[in-house]
Image (cartoon, rainbow, N blue to C red; front, side):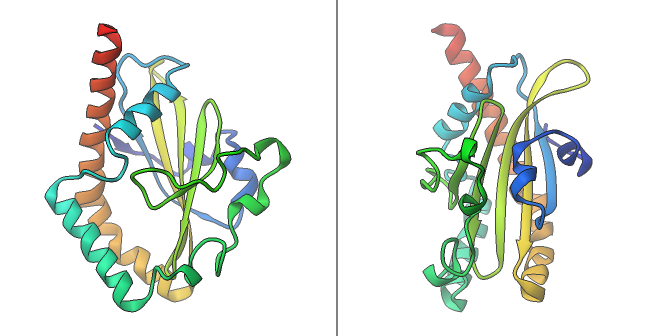
Length: 201
């Protein structure tokens, strides 16, 4: 099962994301179990996530929540192109140091509303923006106290004023009670499926 971690579990590690997100708040930090994973298996986990559909192909209740969110966004104009990254919101790509600039930067991330910022052997950063918030999804590969390697996810946000703060507070119960548990089941199963396939190969 995934576990919610203290914010310090993200901020104390020397991730490159810290260099370009000093004005963001760390909203959530979660770890997902990947039994049997080794230090070089981060790309394997990323492939497993992509094969599982990313944020798509979810249980019906999660799909319903996303559908409601997109309909509200269309109704109130939250997701109009003029409100997104590169328009109202400057992209993190503009802050990247030269050694983090990659050909894949800015590309859509399949199965998600995010675009790629950078990908390294032990961390990946993606961003999205709309009228409510500028959000970063940061995935990293960490070693637990027991010596196991696991997927860690941090969500960093910059709310758009009071409206964005109220929006984040309003969706928090749905994230914790519905979205994250479903994501946990799906992603940890994706790792198990990938691991079984790898053994057979």
